[in-house]
Amino acid sequence: MGSGKAEKPSKNPKKKRKPLAPNRAETKPKSKSKREKNRADLIESKSDNVKSQEVQAAPAAEQQFSFFVHQFQSANKVQLSSLELDSMKDTCIVELSQDMGQDVESLGNHMKAAFGPSWKESLCEKQLLEGKVDPGSPALLIISSSALRSIQLLKGFRSLTRDCHAVKLFSKHMKVEEQVSMLKNRVNIASGTPSRIKKLIDIEALGLSRLAVILLDIHPDVKGYSLLTLPQIRDEFWDLYKNYFHQRLLQGDTRLCLYGPLPSGTEFSGRKRKRGATED
Image (cartoon, rainbow, N blue to C red):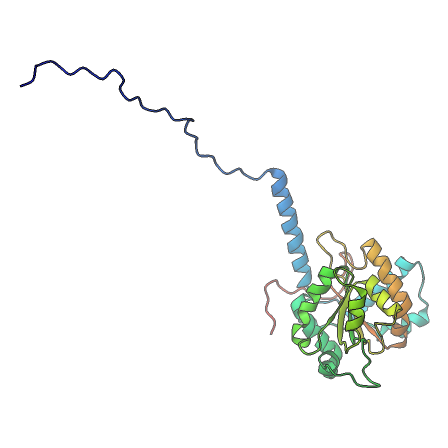
């Protein structure tokens, strides 16, 4: 039997440990600042604008010609004679299909139509033909404002360049010596920037004997600049054009293709295609 005495509580009962730090309330994710939201909206808006321009059908050849002549005369402060205008007007512009947009995916089909029945021979064959196909002389030359855009445009020709690869003619990450070496073979399609293209023509590495179409990429970038409006690039292009291309257009040896929307305010008859429409 017990003594009947109640057990005394321990002198040092274990105390509950206090948390080292107060419980933190769950933090809500910070919402974007107004500045961040505005910036994101602006980028998205510009991106949508570029996409909508790419799915816009091509303006008629007459509007393209008027636009190009205006750009040439204003940039170079010259006035073309009526004789020059008449010799160029009906032959120098490639008429693009109104049933296709002007995006990268449609580019190959546009150029097939531009070259007509001989498109396969001109754009796909890989053999040099003495007296007919000179090395380093493309049938199609694409000129754009940047190396990145040059590469993007070449994606539209993947199905045409499996046997005879396209040549990249820009300075970013590419040495002149590399390009000279590539131009010793048959070249059907080349894409680059004005400065490097001119340099390769100057040193007689890039030939013009087969040049049938010059495609000018006039799509604006996210800042709104294009080949014909970005100051330094624009000046380099017109220097190239005056030295090597203008006479070819006058003689009817080469045609121009303006690929992209004409600036707002320029009237043209091309109709807009709905975004998301598929090609047949």
